[in-house]
Length: 134
Image 1: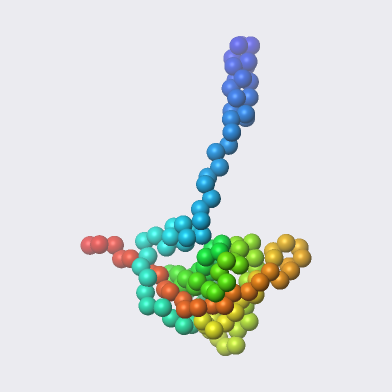
Image 2: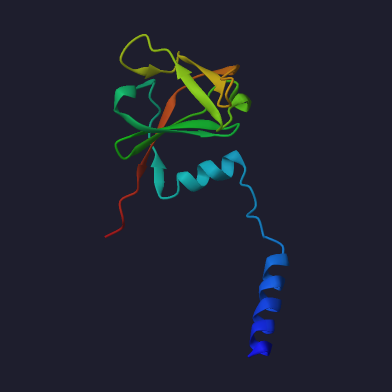
């Protein structure tokens, strides 16, 4: 019985010491490609109805993705290298839609909420799910 307990203790110790294999961090482009798998790009549009956007995702140094229904709208803004998924996006609208002439202020999510930059929006490229082949 003592051998079994000793064997379990040794096994547990070895497992605890084994190095954790961290998943490789994807680049912004790789993250975006993964998010858009199974989708097809449509014709770019200048504005989207922000009130209908159910989700916004910031892809580090790459893009902002807005979900409207089942469509993902990808915006690759000016100053995209400023984008950080830890930032809070502060958008001031001048109408009911988010448009390619709008700017988005970036604020640090830490307790300070300090201003950390801005991006200028460009056209929004819609990505819709590809219908399965019959």
